[in-house]
Image (cartoon, rainbow, N blue to C red):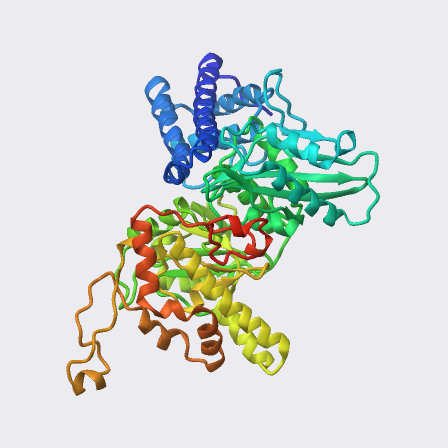
Length: 608
């Protein structure tokens, strides 16, 4: 039953103020996303990266603004709970014809939880489930850009349809040779179609806004022929003469998964109806959770909302227990997982053993740095939550004891509802996609026997990818700090991704040095470091003893990445970044590129 109505006008005014706060947020978010096209056209790469960082903060700023307004105008924090029931009902009414109701619900939840100051929420005052459908939302504005456009090659040929597609993006910078590039795209599409008969419904559907990130803009769409659909993406870049080029043609779900990877920075996309974009993208990547798609579009709070709903659903229909995650335990983070769920949960420990010299606040700052930085496909995105409740009976006793031992400040066990069912409440945690730790992956190669071609090939690939991951991080101005194998993971697509952030630094803040020549025989024989070392001094030639103890690993590493042991490699990249150079790191193999010869862009090993 609905609660008794109390002060309905005030309840409506509060709901309207909250909706005004959300509309202001999305207006600013969309305007910043739309400006990314101009930054791409004018090659404002530093501005693009700065805007990507700053946009992440928009949501929290608008939530704080709205909370301040509600406290000032309505004394919202002292209103009775019955009034908040009415506020929620009025808010639902305001969402009925809204173009972004799912985002508005999340904004309502964020504001409400700030005002009511509850420890954790399983109640009627927030949207635990969506109240308004996002199916078939359409704008009534006749001038609005449609979610996607359709092109029909049968009417004028494939190159002409592709030309119309590109022209509709109205890019304000000339192409180096659009006719040449479109011929390459048409040829690639025809090769993918092969000898398949073109059906009467043969068409190209393309999302109407470009997907912009760093130095690239991407056309995203699909070919439809009969009952078959082929996802594709076309990367647009600046050539060496400063004019635009279509750099490659990516096809299929796997290529698109790499483009939208959880280890990459968020896109900037001008979207009037985000749910329609997500629905279209889901048709291209049906295995990609909607939560990750919203996050990839820069709507990270919505991604968190959907992830948590998916998580609660999984808990309801599973019965396994949370456990201490397999692998070598870290000194800073306590990691646990649920075997049936493809994510890991990470807590910052209360105390760090020697030689770790850091604080909780510094670790959180490192994770924020990664969130705001270009992750270049090599650093896992994280979801950050506070005051999360789990059923106590789903936790192994060993895990509870591990948390009590290493992070007691983060743990509370309570019977909140007084019904005898205990809950584990974690004050603060990070959640990441689960990967196979690289040290475990290498051990599996050893166990399988390197005399077997499959095991030897897997080891070679892992070592190659490990070095490529480090080089991509370097290109993004990141020094990983602790480069041990256990801090990197292997994804299901065979990519190596870094996930231990407590020691990362900007490359430009590091001082790369050679180990000084010994002064005497005692220095040479000493097991201790006899030369002065500053807090950010790095000696690349010392990496080998820590990383390359296994002969097979060392041989593979030296074949592909011996330069990582040379101080000149690190110093030269540092100097170029300090000079303002922005490296290119592509979400596809360099061999996929159409015109490498005419282009000065340098892939940094970002291969699928």
